[in-house]
Image (cartoon, rainbow, N blue to C red):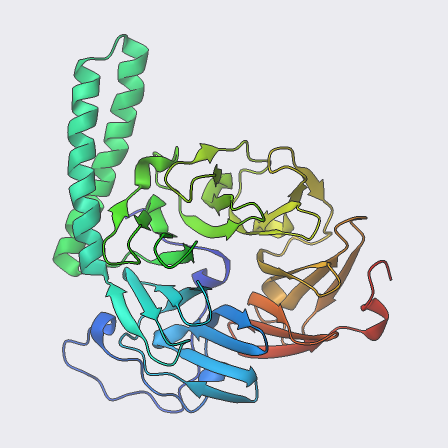
Length: 381
């Protein structure tokens, strides 16, 4: 198989929450083994976090889902899988989706109290394999009817790459599903997308009852990983991924427009600020900002650490979090930047604000907190 380093924090993170390892299980299948209850689930790998008012839901290693308003007082939920969970997205206060490894998609319809499996890796494999077979037939027909040698060569290259993915799928039929989802986003209760490794894109229009493969919706022949989806203020959807992958959809993920990327390394995240500007960020401290989503300006971050996640502070500033506990606080109007480092020096996978000066951080060391110096509380200070 191709390289399997997925995105930022996921590449090297290890969960350490469990006070004692569970007894070995014969023919252990994490995909359909319920998540173990942990004495310190808040100290294991946490990779995704959802904020709804004063309430938070965090997801991570071994199927962990914990809920809290105070990070010192959390509750772990019962979850029907123990695979690594990677991302969480809310449609509304009741309907919440979680993505994970081995093709897992979970849904809650009661605000995160209970969770049900809506898709697993076996179902994903069947969907993608059928799509690959159809695409193979389309390409072979196109090659036979190509107008010139140049067109035929391009189609043959795409077919060669397709054979690689077909081979990977056939291996999964033998050894079991392995492909991770890396993000999930729903526009409403009916329409949503899940994206992940090797260019996987699934779309539903019936609330997850059925899914269609949309891998061909973007120009991604080699199957670069898709790391993040973010919805803009006007309903536009931005997709970022490996090797500078950057695309936009204005029809809720039915079709995509490829954008000229300002960077050809991996992009791990994106966000829109209160000025309507699009921020994208990722490998080696690279950050870019655009007023319209097309023309980008690089922001000097003075760091080479990977930046994995971001959020907006209440005062409108952008906060980006990354490796070695790095936190960057940026004024979106002036580009003025302040840099901090969490005392743990731990890789960070997410950041949210709880009050004027308090941040919740997630990552390899679980739930962490950070207090911004008071002098930095107002924009421009």
